[in-house]
Amino acid sequence: MKAAVVGEKGLEIRDLPRPQPKPNEVLVRVRAAGLNRADLAVASGRRHGALGGPGTIVGLEWAGEVAEVGAEVKGIKPGERVMCSGNGGYAEYATGDWGRISPIPANNMTFAQAASLPVALQTMHDAIVTNGRLRAGESVLIQGASSGVGLMGLQIAKLKGARLVIGSSTNPGRRARLKEFGADLAIDSRDPAWPEAVAEASQGKGVDLIIDQISASVANQNMKAAAILGRIVNVGRLGGMKGEFDFDLHALKRIDYIGVTFRTRSLEEVREIVGRMRADLWGAVEAGKLALPIDRTFSLDDAAAALAHMRANAHFGKIVLQM
Image (cartoon, rainbow, N blue to C red; front, side, top):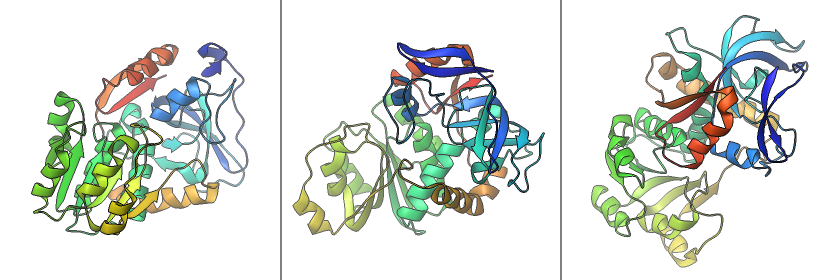
């Protein structure tokens, strides 16, 4: 099979043996794979948790048809159209744990559309609902909202009854589109006055929940914008891994500051996250209420160009490889 693999000088397209599913795994004939920020690190030779290094097949999410199932797999049959999160998605075949496999809804959803969903749905349901403890009537700010994961966060927040949904983007064109996906207010996180705009929109209270994909460069502004007893969930670090942190402001606001990542979670924990997301959101997915725009598609042979497009940070929504 053809696959995009980490080589000594970057991403390489190689011909590899088709993987064999373990007893708990499903083998999928991949038709499309979604790109994620973590893929940039892996493709450059860095590690993402246990994943990475020379010979690694890149890709954290994909969609296709079931080709084979392991002996322990229940309720999934060859020929079914599925989407999955895991490792090795930039390839013509990939294996995934049965607990991370979801059926593609029978609502004319394409493989490209399906491949855009698993990571965004799992990440944002875990951040907003499980760790963020969002309650209907509260206010939410999604930092870095024009990414695929961010756009899904806006939609989930609105679906779960948030009274006020705010999204940030540093690009004027992308910022103008956030309202299409549920944002009541769009802000520029580079503008020093954005916490004041958030305070005004929240009638001086501040926001109850901040989902932060930027981190270091906005950490203190986030706390300034948060309500007393607010929650900040640290999902990503696009603005830096380390930075200044106002501990007194953190204490004064009595903020819950929560870090999340999939890199240190066990297989059982990830299965639980997927199960909770499916139980809570799948009706909305099937109804087409939770969906992401496809910014651009590339062939598997052009995987390096697809990653360069992501690295340029010029996209809105998801970038997808089609096999």
